[in-house]
Amino acid sequence: MNTKPYEQQIHFWGRCSLVIALLMFIAYPLLSCLIFNAWPRPVDVLAGLLAIAPVYWTVGIIEALTFSPMLGSGGSYLGFVTGNLTAMKVPAVLRAMQLMDVKPNTEEGEVVSTIAVAVSSIVTTTILFFGMLLLTQLTPILESPVLAPAFDNILPALFGGLAVVFISKNWKIAITPLLAMLLLFLFMPGLAGAVSLLVPVSALLTIGVARLLYKKNLI
Image 1 (cartoon, rainbow, N blue to C red):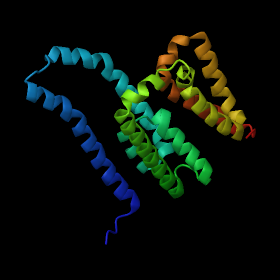
Image 2: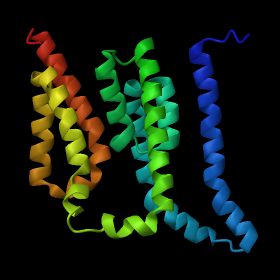
Image 3: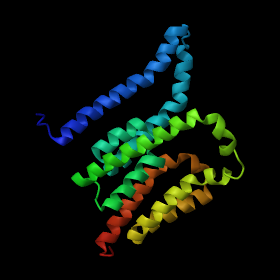
Image 4: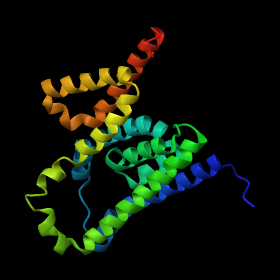
């Protein structure tokens, strides 16, 4: 019988899944080059990496530091392998924890987070699978002008609903980063493409405000 603790198994299989995912990501371009004998010039590869790699590295580090405490070990490994954390995985985890009345960084929260990420991944994969099968039939419907406003407002609707719930829990802490980011985007709309970079800034601001309010016995 396996006597390893749950955490050790999570880290073992999580690291295995990350290595397998990295190998699969590299396999397709590598096999394409081998099969078609079409190798890009190192200069072109370097130019492409310099253009996009720093952004992805920065965002990856920020998301790991920001989302991992919320998702826990199991949710983090599974979430970072399947991707789409901001739009799907993190909202699913937060809502699941709220429904089950558990908190992050607890054993219960770890289990709920892992299940929420897994179910979200299965649902997303299933929808994508049937979407590809029915792409021809669905294209006229999805491109309909009637549905265009709905697709444009999916993320605002998703995070707006979550925001109402969590802001209402402690509005004194939530109001400062909310107003700060709102004013920032109003006066500097060009920063809309740097949302991932501003997440840790907002998180640090929230921690600072919470600490200040705590010292003054306001929360």
